[in-house]
Length: 444
Image (cartoon, rainbow, N blue to C red):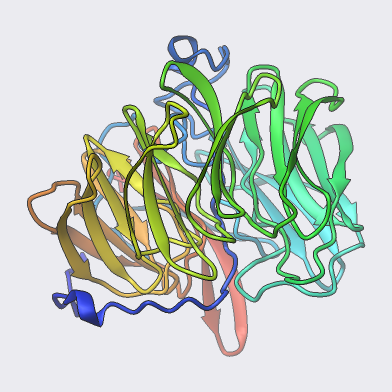
């Protein structure tokens, strides 16, 4: 069992305000719920289960909150390990879990190959590996990004993946046996000013899969038909480089597709791509996904300044509060009226969602790229060094339960469902690096 070490209290004046443009891991991406699908008008996915599955970025409720029984709070490379398997290639996509399968994207730089991987949930065995693209890798990428960063989404029958290659964003749909059902060019994509790669994850809404692609060229949010890959709608976006995955939620009485970036927080209809409202906020570039609680939404970024901001989601543009902290690559977590944020340099904050009142802050250790998951009454949050902090979500104080070390680097976010934690990490030794997929449970 790992125990808390090396923490110290923080004074506001000592918090780093670094505003350098470190762009990407954006494990960040997001998608739509299922048990709440009918209530929220998101659509019906009968093949999926909120208890068993983690079918897209940030889980079934799309906000990092798991509908799940208790899972281990203390674990390590040997403790509570149900299984551990090597992952071919390299990527920062988080696990997508549906039924008895776990899906990851990966890339092979030397061969310039993109692939989708499927693992057996009970044993971790690699069931199949499907090449979906060969060649056309960009000549440059940000060192924190990979060629397989976007997390896949599943509707229970298919899995959807996105990649940047051949100067375009490529979308591909596969069945659970690894057969390619369709492959489509979403749009042209070739950043010039900031050659930092691509990161947004595909988002599912009703009969469509929605994909964002924003750079210093013609930028869009595009919806494709889930069955055919044909374009359903396309909404233009500002010509600015940004990496955030859209959030789809039912808030302020309607389904909204929410996205930050280009110094705006914007809302679109996920049904047809029509703009609903837009308000000034956040920064030039953002990577994290918007979170919400009740009628309020919360966004953070980025570059060239640091800002976290809260809005009413009713289209009024009313700013509830803002501060100069940033979660650039990582998303935040909102729960029961409070917002939890682990900033880039490793300072944990709890703010009251209604007015931004700081409830507490605690210095941990950064840098941070992964996004948090709330499961079994605990928040799980990793830094880039492979340390996973587990703490209780309470506004009273920072209540650390465990500090766990797995691997030497941790960029993807965990998937927690069915009493299991699935975590992709890297292990570096002797100038070599291997990625591993872990499954932790209370049964081991």
